[in-house]
Length: 480
Image (cartoon, rainbow, N blue to C red; front, side, top):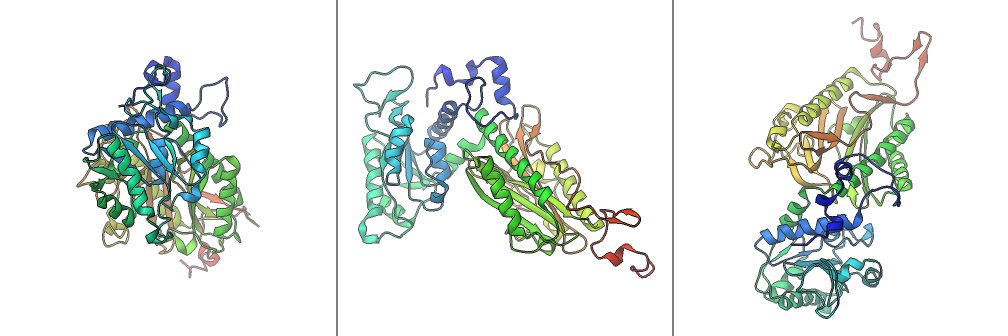
C-alpha cells in the first residue's frame, strides 16, 4: 500500500476545505495561490493508492498497462492524444514498487525533467538505500522514466525483435523484485507481445479489472475535474443553441463545438455526435454533412477531455419548431431519465435503475443487444465507458452496487411516432452520501427550440407545429 503523507491526506484537511473538496462546484481553471483548487499532488497520490490497493487484493504480482488511460491513472504521464490508439508505450506496477514507464523516444527524457514523482518511490524495494529521505517517499535506485517502444502495432519488422525486447524489459523487473513466478495482469496487448512474454515464462492474465475497479470510485479532485469538464460542455451547448438554424450542416456544428472546447482549454475533443432529421431514428452514432432543415430534431453527444477527465453529454433540440410527435418523444425520454435519477443513491443497484427503462421490444428492437446503449449508463473518468455499466443486457443478472463517489452518465432515447425523429438525453451524476447531484447543467427538462423565430400576419409562429406547412391548417389536413 502507498503511504500518504499528512499533507495530502484528506482525513487531515480543514473541515470547511473537506466539504468544498466533496462539492461538485467549480473554481477557476488556473492554479492560484489564494484559493484551494484541484490538488494535483493529491490526485496523483490517491490514484496510485487506489490502484495499489486493488493490486494487493488481486492474485497477480504486477500489472502491465498499454492502455493510455490506465498508464495515466498509474503514472500521471501523458504524451498527447495522437498516441492513444497506438499501444506504443507501456507501464508496470508491481506489488513491491512504484510505476515504471517505458516511453516513446524523447518523451522519457522529458518526463525525467518534468515528472519528478517518477524518480521517487513509496516502496522500500526500489528505493536507493544510500540516499537520504524524508517522510513516506524516497529517491529511487533507478528512474521510473525509461526509454522503450512497442511494435508500432506491427509496423516494425517482426524480425527486429521489438516484442522480445519488451518482454525482456518486463521480465527483468519481475525477476529483480522476486515476482517472476507470479501471474502478470495485462490490460490490452498485441499478440506478438503476448507470445514474447509467454516465451519468457511469464503467465499473462487479464489485468483490466484491477484498473477498472481502482477507477470505479472517484477522488475529490477527480470529481472536481469531471465537473469542470462538464461546465465546458455547458458553454459549447450555449454556442450551439445560438448557431443552429436551417442550412447549417452537421459537420459545421462539430467544428463549432470543437473550437469552443479547445478555446476553453480542452485537452482532447474525442467526438461530437451530431445527428439530425431522418438520421435520428435509428441512431447511427456518427455525424455527417447533412443539411439541417426547418422542423428537424437534432441531438448531440459531446465527448472531450479536461486534464484527462471526460464528458459524455447528450442534448436534443428542435430547429425552428417541433412536431407533436417530436415533443412526445422528448417527454418520454425525459420521464425515463428522471425515474432513473430518482433511484440513484448509495446501496441501490444498476438493476434497480434499468428496471424503470423500457424493454428493447417496446421501442422497435428485437432484443437488448440490438438496442444496446440507447437506454444506457456508464462510468465516466479518464475514459468515457468505465464501471459501473447500466444496461438491461447485463444489469439484471450482474447488478452493481452504487457507492458514494461514483460518477456516471445515464442516457435515454425514444423514437418519435412519425417514424423518423427521436429524442436523446444524457445526464452525468455524482453519487453523494444520500443521493446524487447532476453536473450536466444545460437545460434539458423540456425540449428546446433553436433557430430564428418566425412571424406571420397573426403574430409569432408557433414552435409546436409540423414541418410540413399544410398539416398545420384545417384544409391542408383534408378538413380534419
